[in-house]
Amino acid sequence: MAAQNRQFSAHAGPPGIDDLGALLRTCGLRLNAAQLEQLWLYHCLLREHNPELNLTRVHNFANMVLKLYVDSILPADMVPLPSPLLDLGTGPGMPGIPLKIYRPEIEMLLGESRGKRVEFLHLAVERLGLEGIRVVAGRIAAHFEEPVAGVITRAVEPVTETLERVRGCLAAGGQVLFMKGPHCDAEIAAAGDRFKGAYALSLDRPYRIPHTRHQRRLLVYRRLDEPLYSRKAKAMIEHPVRTITSSQNTHFKEMKKLLTGRGVRKGGKALVSGGKPVGEILENHPDRCEAWISSAGQAPPPPHSPPQLMWFQLDPGLFDELDVSGTHAPLLLIRLPEIPEWHPNEGFPAGCSVLIPFQDPENVGAAIRSAAAFGAAQAILLAESAHPFHPKALRASGGAVLSLPLRQGPALGDLPEDLPIVALSAQGPDIRTAAFPPAFGLLAGLEGPGLPELWRGRAVSIPIRAEVESLNAAAATAVALYEWRRRTG
Image 1 (cartoon, rainbow, N blue to C red):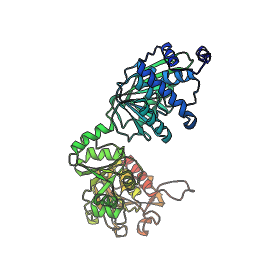
Image 2 (image 1 turned 90 degrees about the vertical axis):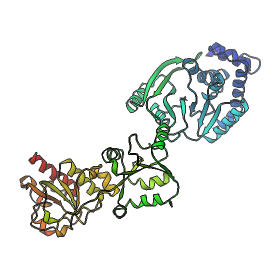
Image 3 (image 1 turned 45 degrees about the vertical axis):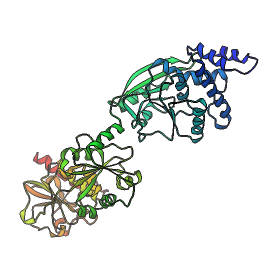
Image 4 (image 1 turned 120 degrees about the vertical axis):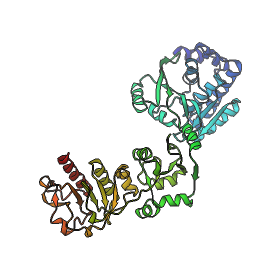
């Protein structure tokens, strides 16, 4: 490297295009006259605009040729370049512009988010007369869905972040080329753990920039799974699609009403959030699924979704209004099952019936989840109860609300005192000594006021430390169900 610098500093005048060609040849790179003129013009543009735009911190001629242009071109001689190829985080155009000059047949996209550099890239593309190359202004993220066969980057962000960023645009079987430093083993390990089944490392090749001490590694990842744009295209064939961009849209207004228990009760529908509950309901209760609701960059309805499933694509702001749990994942619109009434005179079936008076929808959902988990016969929703299909109740139930028989019961104060009920309170005999009838109701009190006096005097308690006043009602229900199941097997 020092010898190269001495060679060009010994010239009577500044280095010229012939010096550029000579230095490239010492690195094994041969450009024809037209290519050499384009690269020289690019070099001159960099030098001209660098003081104003801070395009590069490399100023010495030989260093610019070796560390910028040669470094950009070398991957083209190591692997076949896919096309179209996205240069992610190209900055002033590297490696994309030197690669395009060297391999003019490659269709190139230059991805850059910084405004001044975007202006420079447009100028360079125009002045160099390059065809089949385009500047993509703005930050490339997972919602960017323009199909590309490959991505190349000299950016310093971790491998995992780049692989995530290009999931929206990289084709199945496409390649991501990373021009990394030599010490990237931890990044490779992290990518292998996070993207198992989605990407495979197909090349890990160390190399050195000629005439320098700079060691590099070319990592190439091949995509194994199907990109979002491809899955969306297939889903659009299988499901009717409607795009919603206005809050005045009739469908959106109806969806928004479902964020309250009253709206759920009146509409007979509910919004399900969370990847696991949504997936389980799609699989186990397809007849109840009416619509898939997503935003930009989110997954389409999965394969084998019921054919009657509508697909609503919402503007991000509108979707966020519905995503009250903040899952940032698609929602599922379902039709509610009928909840038949339960009358005290019919008694309880064998086993445990969980009586739910809770007004907090999350407590309702948690109690239903525990009831399903411990094998309760049914859940009886008392008149005070929040709606079990309120979005917060649905999320807390983990989807169990559709797998457990639900009944609608009377008010807490209207339960006859001769019913076989095991009531829970902060005072009373230890539940571990209580008898569980063959058929009974399990009753925890309302949040705050607790049990009516009638049941408080006959309640059992869960032993807790004296300095803690009481358990959360849904947590107490879960503990009591565990004790019952532990004894009955």
